[in-house]
Length: 236
Image (cartoon, rainbow, N blue to C red; front, side, top):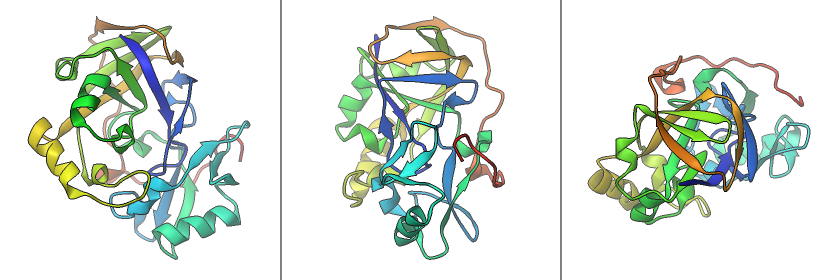
């Protein structure tokens, strides 16, 4: 097995940036989901603002998240976000663990993605592991992935939501995609994971499936009611 793909999502629910190498810390991939879209009642995501997943988000050389090439906290980014999420939407920086829906890494496997049959971007993984049979990921929870000097714990299969129904390129919705995941995969596809030992991930690095008795310190994010608050991030 090997690390076949690597993504970071600087702004939660927006499109990810594909990487060839990245540092992983105790808090996941450095710079992942450090900004989110907020409305009067709290965070807004692609679950209800479907076109958010089509917006390009990247990271500047100094670590600042960019939206369509503009600083996340600038007026240009605000105009774009409000066009897609409503007049009262704005971008907020937050680096607490609640910014992740479950755990701080989501890992997909190439065999399961091939069986899924749609664009991998619908699954929004951080890592893609190559050389894996289609039905293998269901046996991985409770184990760990050694990737270079990093060790990634595998907690559970991910319960998928309606975001998978949205085409990441066009924003068009196809409910049959979500229905397929429920029918063919029992609603579970890809793996909730976390960082046991920080390190550097590089595409092409061999991956070794190992035993592990580690448990994550924190499970669950905003969807279980965790409050967000404004904070500073590197580069701002």
